Image 1 (cartoon, rainbow, N blue to C red):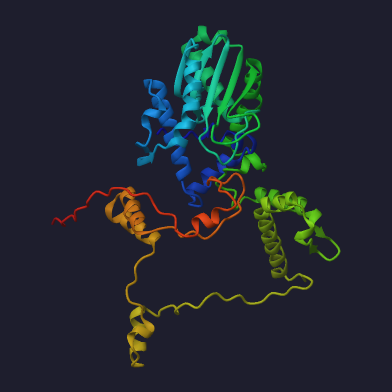
Image 2 (image 1 turned 135 degrees about the vertical axis):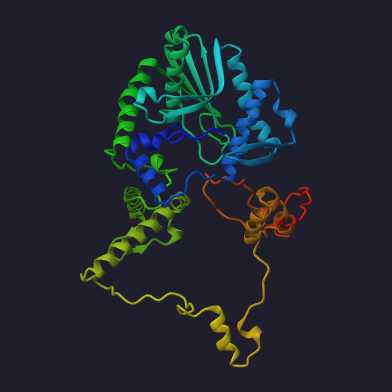
Amino acid sequence: MAKHHKYGGSSCIRWAICTISSKLIEQDVLAGKISKGGSSVYADQGSVAHDLGETCIAKGYNPNDFYNQNYSMKIDGRKVSFVIDEDFIDAVKIYVDHINYKKERAQWWRLEKRVHIRKELDGADCGGSADFAGVVGSVLHIDDYKHGKGIGVEIGGNFQTRLYAICILIWLTRHKPKLAKKIKHIQMTIIQPRKSHKDGAIRVEKITLKELLAWFEDVIKPAIEANENGTGVLSANTKTCEWCPRKAYCTEHAKLSAKNAEQEFSEFIKEEALELEDINSLTNEQMINILSHSKDLIKWIGKIEEHLTSTAEKGETVEGRKLVRNFGNRVYKEGMSERRILRKLKRLKLNKEIYYDPAKLKTPAQLEKTLAHTLDNKADAKAIVTTLTEKPFKGLLLVDNSDGRDEVAPNAETEFSAHAEKPKKRKIRKIRKRKNRK
């Protein structure tokens, strides 16, 4: 897969509003505060779904042709594979059918068209890759497929699709000027079949060419200039902070979390005695609202504790509180090597088992990590450990609707409690021990 641009479409909502974020992220990566790149099983699944859709559209396949097959691809040097099940096919087929209908009517179209617009932005690394771009009459179409079912993506004012539209428009102006001159409107579409939405799986926004160009001049250009020059400002809101790698320690995000928590929970707290309302007096809607903001409340309380501790450390009195020494769990003294400790204990003439644990079997996570390093193959390591382990069912868990796991019926506990979640079998190739060569 091609590398991400510094100012790319997927992060556009962040760097275009929080106009110092890219500069700070760059600094934090260099300082080792945050790691570069990274992925998740959901991101990998989305990449495979995109690739499957592109393959079907480009080569005329039907997604059903891949049913129950192990579909593999390379992502950032890693081999990733998923078994294509009905859920995969149903979602990708909606995307494929939608794009096939459009491309048959288009004067020009491209799949995964990657464009950079450095020249228009004084060399800044800005660009993106549109899943589908096409021109039908006087309308430029930008279509973006979303395989996720956790968070619904809104199309109204969507920064990502607008940036892709700008990129394609600039490319057409460079390479197909006659076609570019015919464009009067931009139609942007989000296709997200696996997430229920009031506007359906296919959501559309249409704006004029004039509106798109004004957005580019008024929003994108100033934002990139501010990020590049280091003159931007921190600006936190739900959308800009959602996928920001700095949000765990960003001061502006902490303020936003505290403010949101204060507003959301103020109606449930009796100010005079600071007593929480009895849960029996709350409606289900109120309890869901509280649960949705529980993380913000925990962060808010943590910030309050940090602030008051800092106040006390400066010598100021904090009513009803005091500073005490905080000791951690016991550790062996500095300079006391394992060999020295064992020698001292042996003098007591005790059984060795009393103070020394023999070698123990590693945990599944430790074993997978060790095997992956030893075999130099993460997939084989995971497969080996999967054959040896299972996930015990512990009951039902109430989570937010944005969670990626499948919903189960209220009586599912009795259905699953008799057995653990059993992993799917996978053939593991035999691995020969390599002889050390001198």
